Length: 192
Image (tube, rainbow, N blue to C red):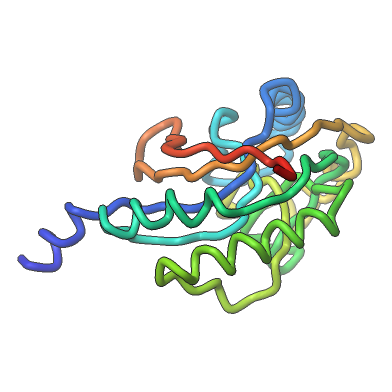
């Protein structure tokens, strides 16, 4: 009972860069045009497209207040980013995740990730134990079938859609809702 009570007083949070509407619309067009060839169980709602910077997990109200303060300390110039392809995580015959590739200022993006990790540690959060791999999750849970023929749809992604990321956000997850993510804090990217 105490565990459920504790969970009711927490929020499931992560830090991310939002994907702007024009790019999200292009991603959505691509997914709608290829869904029948891509047998995944759960498709990301277009308003939920983002690039995760750090998953934080269950967060108390006190941690949330500290996060708000520490994330304001992050200093970085805006980043030129692009969606420029499609890929998967997991074995080719049964991938776990279908994603949009992120390119552009990946060095700046990695530096921003490092600064966010440093700041969130001050609030008691530890980074995941895996290399940072920026991407935009489009779908999860391969449903099987087609013996890998879905791979034929992957190269058909448009060449490049560019945007300037001028900030990052703190997002809250609302499990089983659509859209699932809510922005609860915004932080500009500026050198000042």
